[in-house]
Length: 450
Image 1 (cartoon, rainbow, N blue to C red):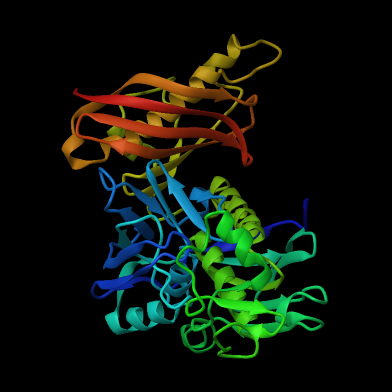
Image 2: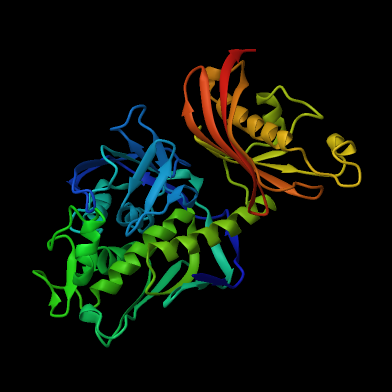
């Protein structure tokens, strides 16, 4: 059972540093720690605003998934991202390296579902990133400054996020009960202000680890097929099995490494002081979701507008809809042709409230679906090859209407591309109010000449 305390609050600053990408490609080959499969990963420079995008070259159509908390999928002992047909996991070491080295835009091409484990640390990732060089880009990297505490706990584990003093500082405490592995009767604690230099020297070389008494159960669950005592520290009552520590507190340093990788899924630089005790990926993800909720609230309030949004005039240039049937006021986020987020301010002046229903006005669910369809049209029609075309809705599946939208609500509409072809489009769409899901559906379109 988890409990959550404290109010998430902060400010997203658009006047951050320039975004950065790699100067040249970087390639890694290795074994997946959990699958045991050979995998090749190629990091390629990417345009500003791309973010960290994983491309599954081994699957038909080469589906992609972006490194974002919006695409998290629960998997034991690792961080997993899932979108449509694309899934990739054990991404945390690579993500921590890119975030700490301030690399914002990269395409990660992989030929399997897992990132290579290397020596169980992030050291080889960091060394290759530094050797590849960095290119600054014109777009700005946004920064989120925490201004009020966020606290999440589950059993004896907890994560607290406090206001920072410029940049990200992390304290990590291992404090296991007496009799658990080498940590019997004592604790490990580390504390760092995360800069590229500190991360490379003090955090990146820390290797993944497991208690000896957990190994059999993990194997039975189909995990750790590529793990061995060279790439994973096995901690038992007598110490580390067939290996040795790089530092006396290497176990805590690696937990801190994992935490940084998970926090990177917020998609912004962080000005915060994070204090964690015994936390793992599950608890880390709860913190990420709390931070993303605050960023979303600022987007909805207009306090944080991404560089990639569209104003109403630009929307009118893309869509044929006009009053009273245009149901999008502003597009606040565009992620290439993969994702779009828009806002609709619902007021009592909407014509449909005159008959639905007098005395108890509720926005019809079919109009929420129409708003989703219009945003999907914006996403699809932005492509140059689709200029002069119309996106005609021809299929609606997996519809769920979960709550009432009433006057005064601000409707947040989100659309994610599942598949896009020259004449067809398939998207997952949802509507939210105040972070609560109101409706969702999968929509399919055909593109025809206007």
